[in-house]
Image 1 (tube, rainbow, N blue to C red):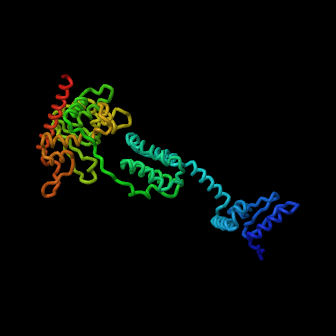
Image 2: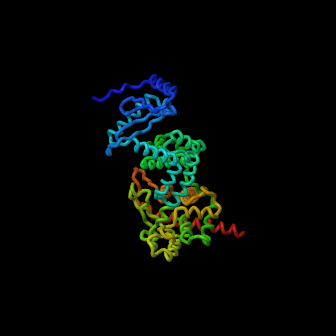
Image 3: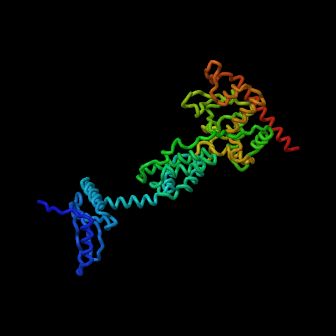
Length: 416
């Protein structure tokens, strides 16, 4: 029959400690509470809770320290005993588990948000221009929560960081900060560095703000000067980029659609370019047709001598890149003194829409159709791709002639 050990009480423990202090012959004493738990009083009077157990699998006796008394109370020591017994029942050695827990805590302390984010960023498969665009977002996050262990960051801390920029009217930055933080937390959860994606908890709280449209030039003189600048040889840059920025104002398609244009979709003899815009590819599958003015056809014939043997019209000369990079068009515009954001490759679409309507007085439906926007007739049916193609071809030629006139007037002003 197993020996029954009387349970300890705080008064009994204090009494035994007092006796030990008075005892002239100091000796180590064990006050058992049963179930492997006991309080060890050493010769110097130090008191430490310990738990004796048989290690799982290998079945060897072992001891694990719990902590000093009275800092670790009797009740807490008993809780730890039950925790250890539960681990043993699952074939988990309490000593080995403690080592693992300490390693995790150490890793969490060095696993700051910035450290985890740096590692996550290496896994992102995004273009170089997107990486550069994200740099400012990462910088904002690093300044606010970068030095905090990722397991300790709260949803409120992420919200406060985002609202610093939201309160300045930078709604897009605030939302992108939350989105990027969420990606880092998802990555950290997979690595076992935290349990919750606190950035997801504030989804829907941040304001959307007013949609910011791409800036556009609508002043004829300034637009003419830009066209004149774009017509000048690109001495220090790529000749492919030169032709891209030269042609873009004439066709006013989305810059990405121009960059990825394929020779097989262009008929120079008929002066037509037909392709399916990526933006509508999954929705309508409608092919878009761009009538090419005689000026554009001439530019493309010259370009064909350079890239005609490749798949893409604006093929990149850099190894590993099939076409010219996303940022090159805007960079060339900035080279001519236009402030960042004042005009962009995409903004030229807005320029064309405004001037075709307000100066050349073409029907807005034809302009919208040429912009590859969905336009419906009086019965609510979308115009098909060839609708008013003849009229649109005339409009595109008139637009090209108008651009040439603006450029020539700018040149005349420069000479005068």
